[in-house]
Image (cartoon, rainbow, N blue to C red; front, side):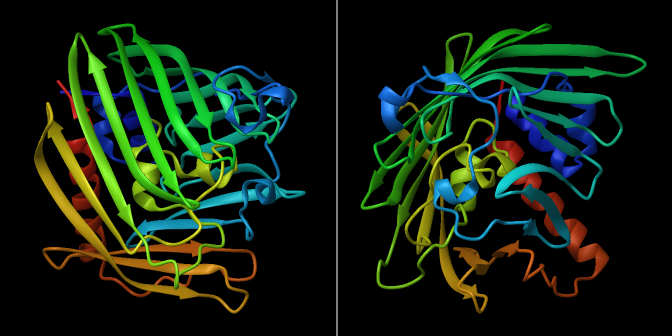
Length: 335
């Protein structure tokens, strides 16, 4: 089974040792560039060289997220200066660095064996990424590998992400590509689909979202399934403001499906059971439950309201984390 470049980046951030052994490490940094101003929000790959990230407020993020937790005791941290993101880290030692002039994003694993980068970044007039070259490298005492390629992003007139497309070449296995498409209505994400292509074999997975616009307004967090459907699958990119605006409301449900041709081969629905807010209306957590009764709690921390993680037994936390990562890996890999 072959993992794609985005899986490897995510594996670094989650500390999955099996993926670290199977995957390659990313060496070059991601550099973002902006679109020409006359292209507006919808520039689809053109733009001007990005010198710095946008202010997160320009992406509609009212409260900069300084901590993000997907499960149990796992917490990513993000840092900001003057309203712009400057870097981040994971509890497994992965460091995200964001440098300016030109803008470059680099991720280095805790062991230092893997490096991933976005560079030669371009952005549109709002500072959202429209093009970047990417690279990944891995090496240890017995093996090494390398990937490089490019990624393009498109947005609608309101700054919502419409499309992400990438073309990657791996030193050992050759080329592959992915495309992610998104549809929006009244400021809310309605559908998201990921399509992976290698040697003519195509694999697709998608999500549909529902909302109740009378409740659960969104002051700046991204639905977890929107992040997961992205080919890069990296929360810090969304919370940096580099990938546009989030939804107007918190989804009331998400249905995730895999496809074989035009037929659904696997499907699961997650219902939002609770959304809690801090006193300033920033989102404290979003709780979802699947049809089997499993509960998923996504927590968000801020300078004024750091995450107060409830107590878990070490064994339960480890099992839940492994289960979540295994499920995502199973649906995000291609032969």
